[in-house]
Length: 191
Image (cartoon, rainbow, N blue to C red; front, side, top):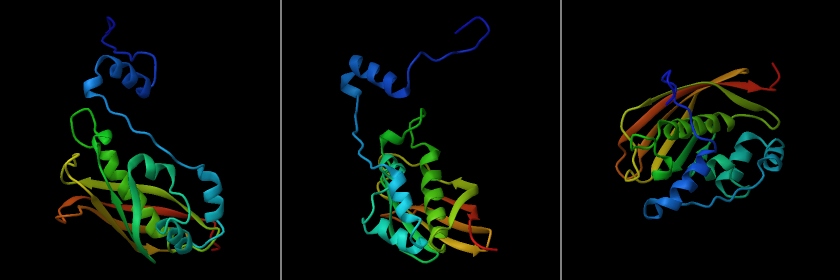
C-alpha cells in the first residue's frame, strides 16, 4: 500500500497470478481445460435460420455451443417458441472472494435464457440485444448446490422490443435461487 491508501495490483492477469500461487500451494490448486470453437462461423450459420431453428440446432448439438456456455458450464436443454430452459453446473471455479458462487453466474444464466427465449420468436436475419437485465438473487449458490435450471418465457414481443421473465431453481428440489426480467431490442426487423 502506498502512503495515500491506494492499493495497486501486481503485474499479470488473474490466470498468471493463479499459476504463481499453484507453484507455492499445489495442494489447494485446481485446473480446468476449456475447448471451444470459433463463434463467428457459427453465428453466420445461425443468421440464415429463424430463431427457433437456430436454437433447436444448439439444443440438439448440431452446432457448437458458444464459448460462454463452455466457460460457465451452462446450456439450453429444452425449448419451444417463446420459452427456453437452461441448465447449469455451478462449481468452485465460479466462486467470488467471499466463498460462494459469484452473482454474475446467476445473472449470466438469467440473461442467456431470457435472450434465447426471445430469440425463438425471431425470423432469419433478425438479431437482438439486451437493453436491461434485472436480477434478484434470493439464495446463495455454492459448489454443493448441484445442477440448476433456468426457465425463461417471453412476456411481450413487439416489433422493436421484447420483455421476458425467468426463474433459476435447484434442479433436484425446485428451490428458487434467483429470478429476473429483461428488456431486449429487436434489431433488423421491418417496422
